[in-house]
Length: 258
Image (cartoon, rainbow, N blue to C red):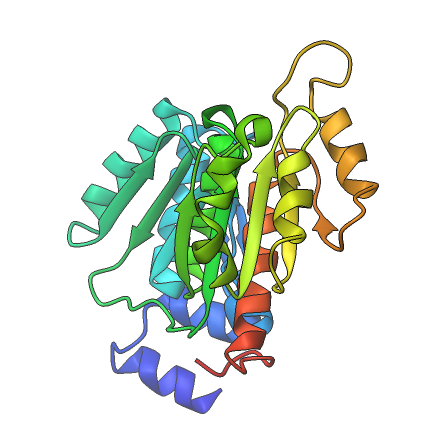
């Protein structure tokens, strides 16, 4: 504690950073940001924009940058993303702000922030362009934890040769996320082609009964190949699970070892 207080007095830590190290979280008017999650779990805290006002999301992102050097916002619509960018351009003019409209994410890095280096490869593969919203969210989230991330898009099994053409890339992965809607055959097929863990990510694409992702979820739960399954459109969960597996591949099984 004395070291933290000395660093605060010397100006080496901001009040937000000192609070985050002492309490494990930073307090804002919009809520409490879990600043210690990366040290505790090895994965970044995400700021879910849904259910919050754009101003609240911006305040949380500011607290994240102040306490950890970066911010990860998920499920952000265009208005929220613009307000976050505008707010952080003012509060942290040297920070970089990256928006992925399809993934609905906003990633902010302070000028002196460095991603952790995790020596493992994550491949995120998706069945069709309509599945890219969840797949790209998974890719963005996994990338913020430090592993190398590659995406393979639009390889749905309606033409299985599209998948087979990417077998070398798939087999070079240490962990894969496979996103698909409709009957979600792709993750099962991928899991039968590789020896690495596969995380099935069902998406809410399709027609009629079960087209909201229920058929995809149930199909993956009944997969005859070994894989794990997350909830419908749960790109954040799939990305964090992939990142945790990647850390294990790199020998980073305990927190605080970056």
